[in-house]
Length: 458
Ligand code: GAP
Image 1 (cartoon, helix red, strand yellow):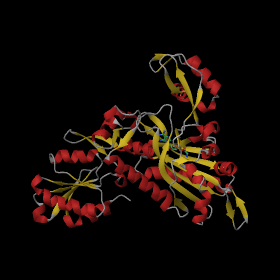
Image 2 (cartoon, helix red, strand yellow; image 1 turned 90 degrees about the horizontal axis):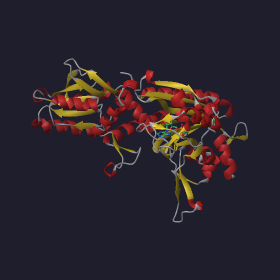
Image 3 (cartoon, helix red, strand yellow; image 1 turned 60 degrees about the horizontal axis):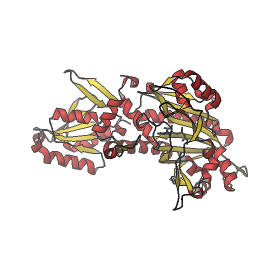
Image 4 (spheres, protein in one colour; image 1 turned 120 degrees about the vertical axis):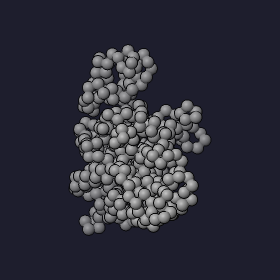
């Protein structure tokens, strides 16, 4: 089944039932477009982050990790351009009093890129052509540019002086620490600084479950390079980012690369490639790789009066490096992995099973230990305890028929089911069942851990 034919509401229900994602503040009627991650969701998220860190920091000789704050000096957002440029075109229908993204309306109705139009052209097109929308007659306002940064006040007095912003991207925390990190780690160009952390955007139209939310998490790398090597590094990180996404088990046919038109580039970018994913609600951006040039360091140099520069000893000169930035949202990646792996299968006996065909590294639980009958529980539990002591994420389940227990594990993507049965006492063996093939093998209890590790997909 193709992703576009999958039923999003069925997936959302599944994720709630099995402890992946819950509506946030549910007992108070929820808070629109906010979601909490349950025990299964957070295990999957940790696997995603671990993999990103390994690929973009650990395995890259010249890259280091970082962690900056959500709240930064407001001048950061003046320098980065977010105070003046980080806006979405908002249009309101006065008949139903609802607000919409004007660019989204145009793109939905024409399947064309709205960035080629000016604000005035977009406004005119909607006012003249969209007489009914979202189940209502229309009477459109003009377009207003709406700043997406969340404001809050620091300290007790809520006047303008105390206004600060929740970061809309993690990147700026890295740029303003360029000297600190480069000098303390004695880094030589080219090198990267990466971090994982929460970002906030007061989106005009959040939605599509966890695809677009106001609070989300980003994994961003700022790769600093010589200005004349930017194209080479840009190509490298486009390719690397694509391979990273495929390495999470996402299928080749579920993604595509889209190069931004000149007119739609963000204010800081010389070139951007999006990696898009086919969700049930259509193609959407999953990850972006941008050539940010020297825009950010230059702006911070100017506004902060600090020289954020790199001294090249060989050339005996100071330079402002160019920056290549692969950036991806954890929540979106989680949704893509779930959608891609969510499969309904007809079995030989005409039964149906839902199975999450996650790749081994992503599975929240690698295995589940099950006694065939409850009274074998003690023996099965000791196998379970041995496996968790070795650091594997493993479940134990003794409730319900063995068939139903297998289905439950399939539904949450558990890679192996290990069953302790009547013969186990005699032959010191268990049955190990593979999630996807459902094939079973009999192996020695002492060999379970090695078996799992050796069969792990590399
Ligand atoms: N520093 C560059 C930057 O933030 P972006 O394209 O605005 O670029 C990067 O965001 C990634 O962050 C996106 O590709 C997406 O995965 C994620 N993202 C952005 N806005 C989001 C939102 N409102 N909800 C969830 N994820 C979001």
